[in-house]
Length: 82
Image 1 (tube, one colour):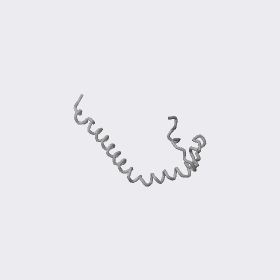
Image 2: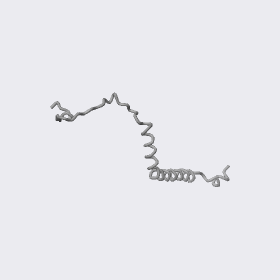
Image 3: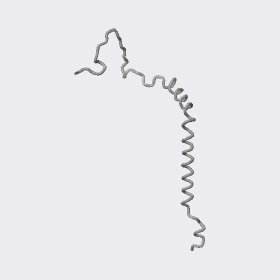
């Protein structure tokens, strides 16, 4: 019962080559492939994502201003106070 998942059977004629995770370059292709791919994905999705966020911000901003307006005291109520 000492076998692990990758060692359950021996297959003859198949050669596997592996690179140790300690020898891999973790930032390989970040600037040449990663950033252009990120820009492409953002451009393709911006029209689906931005309008709801803009609408949500406009509603939030309106609600804050309306709340401040409704909670403001009316100066005419205090015109004759001494």
